[in-house]
Length: 391
Image 1 (tube, rainbow, N blue to C red):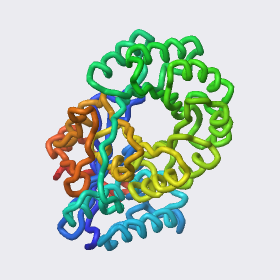
Image 2 (image 1 turned 60 degrees about the vertical axis):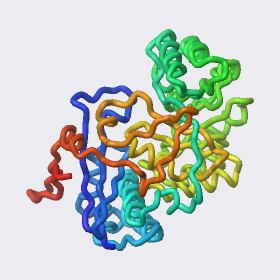
Image 3 (image 1 turned 45 degrees about the horizontal axis):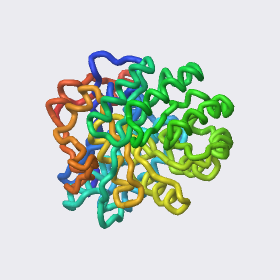
Image 4 (image 1 turned 60 degrees about the horizontal axis):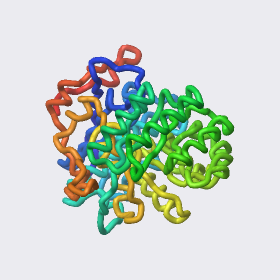
């Protein structure tokens, strides 16, 4: 098969706010080859990601992603990995390229799975897909009482695990302790409690460490992204000071080497990978293998649609002992409407990874039209990109 086209759909809610919620807009990718179609999603700002695909060449190491994709052969996983290496080399100075390629690469796995009639996790080399325990991924409330109510809601919905993240965590030590206590109270004594600081402490190890006693008392399982995604020295220092709580990170990695550094030098106990950022499923699977060999737990990262959720589950579908997974619970309507299929917890509170071809998720054409933003990019009077509404 030859790659005939790569189409981008820029979707957005009527109002996009500063809330740390990635489901407010989306960049959906459609790849067509040999009469087959696959779908992917970039976890990045849509407009610069589109530009990285279509922009004029700046120089030999700063070429548009399209130069390494269109017209290329796509007959198997080896072709995806070959193109990934070509994009990395040809677009090494185009920093948005990794995010753009992530959605395209994701769509290629979906396309291959559909063409062969098998789920993507089988193409990645797994013989079986094991159920995961979803943790409800939510933001902290604006007050400890709001956090308590949110935790009670998640517990009432049957979630055995929940992660609370971002603002107002980090505003004050007393406030953070109050939020931690509220989250534990609402989730109950047996719930798996996870905390995401959203990189609020930069590289300030002492500030992050001040929260450890309260986390230990509240039996927090992991402390996610206390620092900048590449602050490996800070991660390493904090990882040596924890007791039962483990550090976690990796969603900021836009290649597998960054994730490996976080394991080797940052000492994280949990590595969290977003297929829409790291370059797709191939590097995510490589990180999963790397983590298993070093006794680190792999977890998906996703906070957008069920297309992205399914894609994020594929790289560790066959890891029976890596059992918890991120599961967005407060998606904006755009992300809900974007797909016709939705992955939901079963009667046992677990989620089962789709065994249908590709990702097992169908796109909702009507939603792509309803939330679409028209985009046109011109350079020197020449149109280099125009959005499409035919789905």
